[in-house]
Length: 323
Ligand code: VAH
Image (cartoon, rainbow, N blue to C red; front, side, top):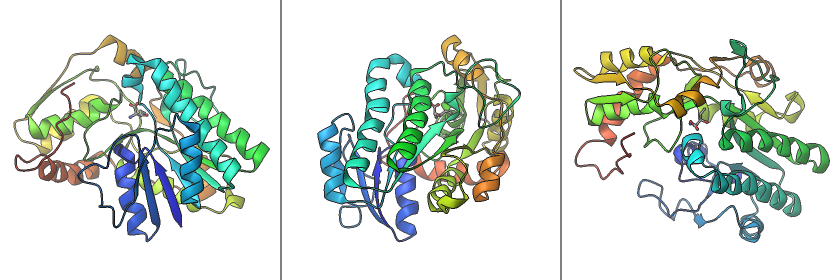
């Protein structure tokens, strides 16, 4: 299938492109940034410069590419979004609106959307199902919650096949990109490249997390599921929910002599405390047979060697800002 990916240069985007190409799909990538050095070259992957805030540019690209489906990933994440809520609203809310409008006007059937546990807010039960009231505390969460509702509206009103997963914090062999859940990824990244990391959260912090291979499979399996099997547009998908201290123990066991300690940042800790501890993903398991395959241990065993290969000195890898 011809597939257009927006936000292709982000943490999910580059891995999703690789998965789509491995499945033999024709992929068009778009991002406001230039093709990263580690992306496939132009012969295999057309890379379109696109600012999703520009409705005309979005429509022109969709009209030119004529994809069978769009994976709309372009977004500014929670922590970075709090430093510029106005831009985050324009990119996240306006960008999705422009993509849905382009799909409507150009007759594109399916729009896939990456939502997040950041749509939830304070006062949650210990385990959170799909239909818990959404009370986001970040601009990122607000735009993702309203994005879910906007997509469901386009589905009802205009027949767009809008589907979304609510992702936990995603962990992958990548440079963290401004997420509040990145304390977990930084334990691995700085554990490998610096041998130490001071996490910006408490040791007992607990949120749902997921290894990227599971995250990609969830998005692709939902996209490929027969529409008749789906009872909703938006699905929780869970994997594992370790405390930050438990993650630190897993990293310490995998990387000898690494030192991880904790110095909570009140702002980011408040965001983390407003998110669920555990997700209930029964609807995804029932409707399209969702099952995670990685837990903390199997993720750690796979991730650490990948990070070592990515962060060795002779590798030209963009150094993540130390957070
Ligand atoms: C963030 N990584 O921290 C994202 C994610 C659940 C968190 O949506 O903003």
